[in-house]
Length: 125
Image 1: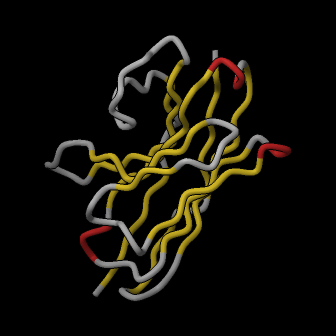
Image 2: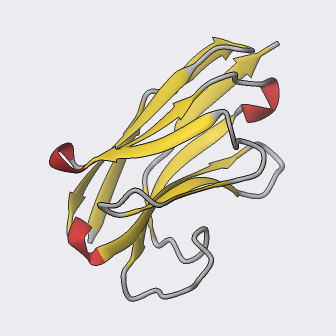
């Protein structure tokens, strides 16, 4: 089992920045990817960014490329999402997630089975 706890959400004006954090505990070594997803009211869940656990290979959703950066501190077992140039359409609940190593799907945004409780990000115009 892997436990994930997000923090760092809040309200910000358009053009501003926020950094989300996700502290992981449990069998982190059993995961292959860590990532951030978001879901706005009335919309489907969207993959924001993922990273190989303990590595540097990253993947981003088209809507956040060039604005968001995912990175991790392995010593602190913490995943981060630096969000710059925020837009009102970035408003959503953001979830930290992890994918078990036994899942070998080639899509880096599929197969995540461990989820945090979410943290709200609200961007006003």
